Image 1 (tube, one colour):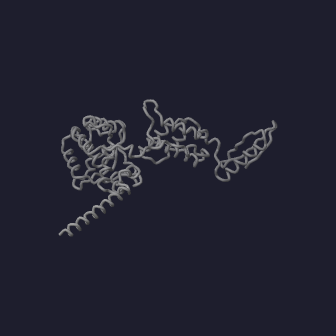
Image 2: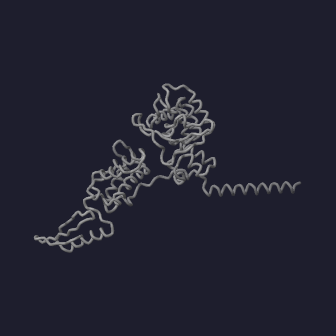
Image 3: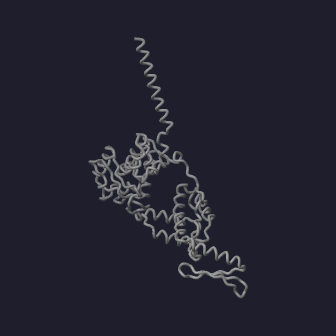
Amino acid sequence: MASLARRPDGTYRPRYRDEHGKEHARHFKRKVDAQRWLDEVTAAMVTGDYVDPAAGRITFRAWFTEWSGRQVWERGTMLAARQAADSVTFADVPMRQIRPSHVQQWVKAMSQPAGGRRSGLAPSTIRTRYNYVHMAMRAAVVDRIIKADPSAGVPLPRARKAAAAMTIPAVEEVGRALDVAPTWFRPFIAVCAVAGLRLGEAAGLRLEDVDFLRRTISVRHQLQGETSSTTELVAPEFGSERVVHAPAELIAVLAEHVRRPVLPQSHWLFSNGGLPLNRNSAGHQWRQVRKAAGLDGYTLHDLRHFYASGLIASGCDVVTVQRALGHSSATITLGVYSHLWPTAEDRTRAAAGDLMAAALGARADSLRTETL
């Protein structure tokens, strides 16, 4: 129900009631402006695009807290989403006042040094944070908090090609790391390098996860957290539950490891003083090993790249590598490691080389026959 009336002071007052029966009104000096506003509101209500003007008064911080609290997320996803929300530069701006320029300013801020950060965040990190904010904005449009998503179409920094960004240690370098590592930490490095487990997955292994007869390692959970007080056992990343078929050499290393007495006793396969490893403690141990081995810059995650590159070099197809790494889809595997697979040009050269070798071999045989 809508109406337009002229007030005693000469202004025009259009009024309407929304779908909940709440009355809304504004004042205009000109009748044409008042009628235009009333027509626009009426059309929006008819088409289902109507947004209550009061709904957009909620700040982004409050909306994100409300929206994220309804999501069915694992702990790691929730932490990543909160980190993204905490980083925005428009947290206290009402939703209806957020413009694409606000989002652009935030993206630029992430791309530059700030606080204790010497350089901008990696393009992949920026994209991940943007995606969480973008999801919240789209949900606000669906819930009719705002009319349009101000984050839509905002340009993001381009990521470097995987070939340039990825660092893969050589076989000799991994060998040196295993040689100089403390006896108790050597199997942890081996599991990362020869089974491709992520840091949290390796830290979360228990004795029952290793089948020494079938030579398999079951990835059923992972440990997340920076310190012992914040470490929590959670499910693996989506689609990462898997059974890794381990080589006999790795199983032998693990068998020797569990036979060794560890005090105090721990139900974790790898522990330091009875406490499970976390991101900080495992990272510290790895940096000590890296220094002793004379390696520069490699992370524990680079050992996972080492494992993947070895599978690809041995001729494993993308689905085999995907399952071994615990990627939820082959698309993810190709997105990270496609540059390691032989290209069509490489296969063409190899096939042509085989043809030439065969032709030259046949020619040589023919000449020998003629000589005889």
